[in-house]
Image 1 (cartoon, rainbow, N blue to C red):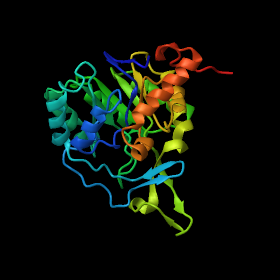
Image 2: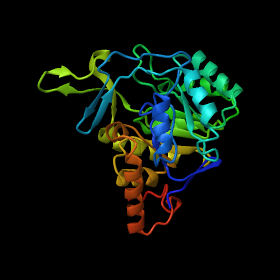
Image 3: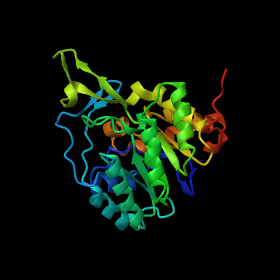
Amino acid sequence: MLTTKFGEFTYDNPFMNASGVHCMTTTDLEELAASEAGSFVTKSATLAPREGNPEPRYVDLALGSINSMGLPNKGLDYYLNFALEKQEAIAPEAPFFFSVAGMSVEENIELLRKIEASNFRGITELNLSCPNVPGKPQVAYDFPLTEQILEQVFSFFTKPLGVKLPPYFDLAHFDQMAEILNKFSLTYINSINSIGNGLYIDPETEAVVIKPKEGFGGIGGEYVKPTALANVRAFATRLKPEINVIGTGGIRSGQDAFEHLLCGATMLQIGTELQKEGPAIFARLKKELTEIMTAKGYTSIDEFRGKLRSL
């Protein structure tokens, strides 16, 4: 009932982690592989390991979370070695995802060249939307630069590739970005990353709650669901059919998942709520989504995916 076709591959269900959550170590990744998630994605890797921003850099909030992680990760080789060792053992017919996020255009290209040269046969995600590295703007808000990077990438990269995008807030920007993305043989886009540079104040201490960037950080969870749904819908209706959309943002329940799928998502990533509940969340989400579909008389996701009604 919950199977989903994604590019050339078919997954048992559409649920997976959002990169950055429960995927820092190989132990984390093994736990995701053993969970009821349909797939998983590795932590966004840079060429060299990074400590990330100073703590506290992630805080759970009543309606979501705020974070300014700063891309902490164990470096490309750590995750690539895991991927090469495990890709045959972990669902070889439905491969997992490998995320990279360079600190510069040149680093992005070098990361992807290393993956291209390797025996990795899964799906690669290029993160163009990391909002929490001090002094570094989000690449995906610079449209000419985004197109330039994709031109470079597709001059050599032959494996399935998707890009992770930040939220956009203007219909003209949806149009402009979709026009760029449609020029390339992308497998998917992932929308959205957290809403960048929010601020949360502790009313008792009258202070911010995270240390980096004087408290400015990416907002996730319930707060961002309407923005995430809008971005999923905007791109699902603008991109050519062969580019899938991964819906990310504010998924806490089967109903949230249903709404993302209704807007046109093919896979769904869980961030804040996975951080709060752990990998057991995937069994709950599967159960809740199945119950909603059964109540509505749907026997497959494709019967309603992308069929949001307008008034």
